[in-house]
Every structure is written in C-alpha cells, then in structure tokens.
Length: 405
Image (cartoon, rainbow, N blue to C red; front, side, top):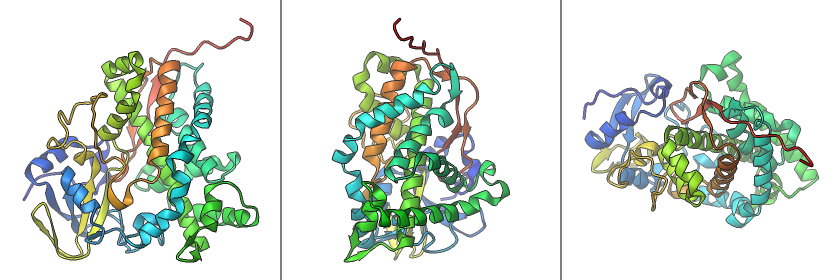
C-alpha cells in the first residue's frame, strides 16, 4: 500500500520523540509496510507495526534471522562478530546460557540493598541543589555504577563506559560524532575488555568477566575476541537502556501529574507504574531481522533476503491488545508489553533493569517528590534508540541533615 510516511531509517524522523501518529496510521492501514529505500539509498525494508506480527517475527528466528544484521543501516552481513545479539539458534541459546547465571532473579535480588545505597548516593549529589539535569546527574549515574561493578570495572574507569556507550549508541547524533570519535569507541572498548580478560585470567574474581572466561560452550571456552564482544554488549545494553527507562519514566510522571500524585499517595502502585512506563516509552525502538526464505507476515508475502523491522513502541500501543492504548495508566494490569523484546532475544538483564528503576523511583518519590521541568528536553538523534540526552529539572532542595539537631 502506498502511504506518505516519513523515512523511519532517518534519525530526523525521531528528533521530537517517537512519531506515534505515523505508526498508528501504519497499524490501521498498512501493518506490514514496505519502505522502498533506506536513508542511504539501498533497497528498503518491511515495517512491522502490530503487536501479534511483532511477536510472530520475534518468535520465529529460523524464518527471520538476526545473524545478517540487527539495524536497518548496517552495510555488512555478520557485523559485530560473535556478539550474542546477532546470533540465531542453536548458537544463541548456547551462548546465552553462559551469561544467564549472572542475571538470575536470585542473584539480582541479592543486590537490592546495595542498589538502594547506590541510589541514595546518586541522589545525595544533587538533593541540596534544587536543580539538575535528570539524565546525566540521576538517570545515567545509577546504571553506570551498577554495570561497571557487574563487569569488574574499577570506579576510576567507569566513566569510560559512559563515554564509549554514548558514542556507540549515538553514532548518528552530531554531538557524539565530533572528530569521528564514535568510530573509535568500539576499538577502545574491545582493547579495554581484552586487558580486563588478561587480568581476570591471572586473578579471578566474583564477577561476570570471570564467569564468562571460565565458562564453556560445547567444551570450548570463549576466545578473547568473543569475550570482548560480550563485554561490549553487556556494557552498552546495561547502561543505555536502563538510563533511558529511568529518564522516560520521570518524563511521563512530569507529563502526567495526576499519576505522580497517585503514586505519592499509593506507593504500592509502583510496580504496575513501572510496567506502564516500559509499555509507553520503551528505550529500543526496533530490531531488524532478515527473511531466510519466502514467508508471510499477517498475510503479506515476504521474499527471502528481505529486511524486516519490528517496532516495539508501536506494538505497545496496539489498540487490539491494549485498552485505551494511548492513555498512560499506572494501574494497568495485565500489561504484556514488548519493551524487553520477546522470544529468543528477550532481554537477559530485564530483572536488573526493573530493580534499578523501582529503587530509583521509590527513593525519588520520597526525597524529591516535586520534580518539575526546568528547560527543554533534548532527544538522542537516532532512528534506533529512543534516547533522552538532556532533561533539566528543578525541585525543592532537601534540608541538610544536621547531626545532633
């Protein structure tokens, strides 16, 4: 079907946030839609916008594979080497089992008290000021500290992870493309990971790097390049996605003051509120798959070799699945959103992300309950990540604690 819609491979389409009106039109009139060319002039791709179709593609990796690329604009098949994100069965399952023991609910729940103290320390840095940039001062600091500890990165190096992930995820954003610095981020991170691997092989520790380096896949251990690929994936995913989950969650509470007031009055609603934040503004906008053979999606013929993109913010607003799909409802239950994906590539760190966002908002609602805007929001210039670069806020400063008073 011919529709006049903007190019979704162009980051300019998302400069003011995700274009929900465009995707509502697609869901209603052309739910499996062909865009003839991408931004770079190459042969186009399918846009899959409905919930059930997104699930179908995601749950059929033999028909719609990841190994040929996960981004519309990738030019080389197999880019990323042995990164788990770009693996299909059976390799994906075997490699996922290597990292999964580090992210079990039991292991993550054991971190709760530590994450609580970390959140308090992060809020302490701004609580007396009365204003801050919510993204850089609050939302980014928590996942950065947590994932750095997970990966065995010492405190003095943790902001290297922040810089590298900004440059990798922001490869389309002019702010992060200065002097071609983004082109060297992966090289720098791979080099760091290789040096860390050498240290852990000599001196094992109770952390993810040691676990990965000593685990085996079919009787063989990870090579150093494979370990470095895991390190990059965990560092970027653990930092960027949670940072944007927290940022969008705060944005939604600011935009819906009635929801914030209700949470202040009924803190027990926070778990369902978090799921609604995830549904309403997932941090990853899409992943690409490639048809391995002729197939169909929703009755639409797909040719072998076609690129297929599945759009999570659109699926999460599908009125056939969610009542009042465009309403932000912190009491919504059930809420079977797709913010963490579905199928083979369901986010391995979802439990950790939920814990971090829950603790952050538990603390913020008590300590800084009147956060409000203090300037314009700036979004990441990206067609892939639903990112927030800056969100100035103000609030009533906490009164300093005076010992003995």
